[in-house]
Length: 571
Image 1 (cartoon, rainbow, N blue to C red):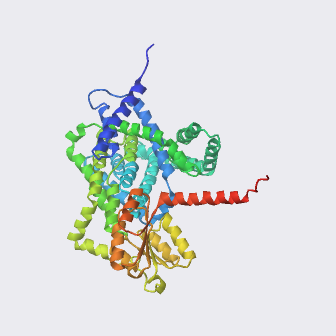
Image 2: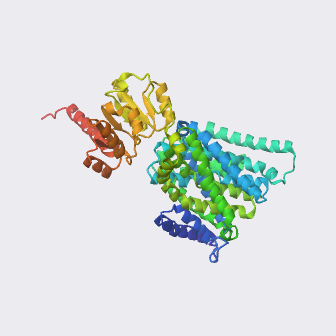
Image 3: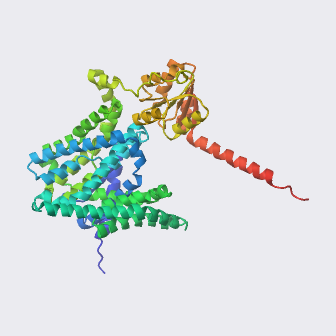
């Protein structure tokens, strides 16, 4: 009996080669994503040897898109975005406009049609969520102010791309010049599309955000892990398919809002964790299928065009983002970190160029140029991050303008002249106003103990000052920040930031200015805690140890209470 094994061979070859090349990429200190794309190139139609079934790979890629966008929706946090909205929203919009304009100008110069040039420019303007998050995590700065700004910036880019994916299909005919010039018909089509999208969003926000968390709760009550995982994946794929079949909305948008409504559930973290292996597997197949579309000949036949694309991604976007961050009075380190985070393109670019090719907007070489730019920029992203610190030192040493910008007057960088005397002497200096810092501040306020907050996020400092809290903005690694917090006369320094990389520099500055100061540090790493204690840093609190002690105290107290309440046995 003959068997058609195209699906099996495509999945086996795709995952097997992705594993091999992903492993080699990681060993070479490159993102695994580079290996996945190269695996796709190897089994694609443009290289000799085995060629996977393009039709099956395309459908697997669609599932990958659904689960990728579902993951983006699950991690979308309006609260995190609002915390950095003053820089993330205008910064992302302007940076995308600059990158899109550069890409469009380049494509028009090559003789492409305006619609193809627009899609090309947009595809170069948005960074990869996967690459950015993993780069920030590997450096331990995901929860830092720089990390939160970069993530907030990317969230705005993702939302903009979701809007583009909604609007591009109805505008495709007009942009390609094949839809005529009937403006009324264009507006009708656009209005109908927006009406369909609006209906879908209303259904999801009114019904979906109540029904799906309730459904997840009911399935969770069964105690079956398999059913729970099945419920999450089925919701993601079913909502995405239903959005397309009933409302004409793209798979990507449907899956994104499936993730958003699932986030409303109290089991959202478990849902993300349980679905992660399947999401990762199909995400790999998505990147493999994208690699299959890449024609390596473009590197030989159009080297200068590839170089121009890479320059826009790494140089153009970096300069635009860095200038915008500096314009918002953030330090040079923040500007360079955010710029390095965005100096690559990824999954949204692939989805967009795929849609552009389907709508006959992009020329055949368009996809290959974008894929080449993605491969090279992702491969070089580690290098770009690696030069942030030496580049910062070199710029400050060589550029008087950079030094003036770094040291310019910032109203939030020093305490106001009318600050109460109690905040200037014998106060507590609290570095970091995150989850831990907020609770320490609340306790200090309740006990009427004066304190000054040193926080990198200027928006947080502005909010604190509006509430009457003494606060200064800046990185406490810089001596000037601790000086402005009056560390020389402080009673105690509390370092509540999760990142312990710069703790020693803060401690050294504090001890140099105030040898008798008491220092309290938090860490989540046991080895780091032992090292800090051996260096006589101060009182070190280990997150897991404190949690274990608190739980132990509770168990012992409840056990003693139960024992004392038990009536004596009658003999």
